Image (cartoon, rainbow, N blue to C red):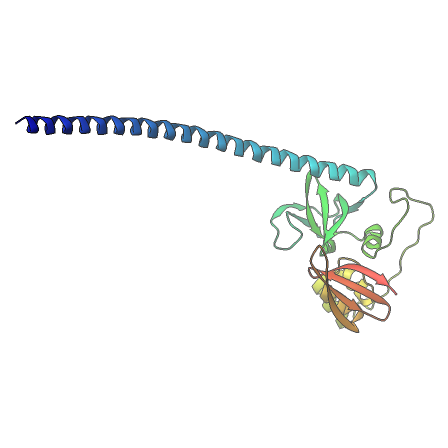
Length: 245
């Protein structure tokens, strides 16, 4: 009988200890879950704060870049063409349309382009418009062709204009005009080359190169075309460098 009582006592003691251990574990779990929830909430708040900081930082950096561009003369005052222009968020026809800019509207054009999409500012909004939708502008043409001027913001009494001739009844010109717009078609017909033109435009303008090769740079792989008078470098399908021989 004593053994029975002893066993029951030991069993009760074990059960009591187990219950106390479970309570301690449950209490610790509750404490950790509370701490986890508080930490997750703080992380979420910090993440939102970080997003806001990044947004403000990006806006300020963009504004600084624009102000610096204006200070050093890296902008061109131009107008949209007779058909107006579409301001897009990316330098591509795939970019989302931000706003339609009316015809013959003054806009601020930055000397920055990607595949003939210029970065512009209109009505406080910044985006990209296609070169073909801009009104004819000699300063933009000079920039595309690699020409530079010492005082881009000043106008002198004597100005020189590049004279381009073309037979607009020529079927080739009409085809090029449909593909690239009138201004670019005229330049191609006159066998011009400029930074930013596409591979197709280059072939239409000066034909096939004597040879092709690739070079690897920090930016990536560039394609090099050799002509008798030029060495051309293409990056991402766009003419990025012209070297006269």
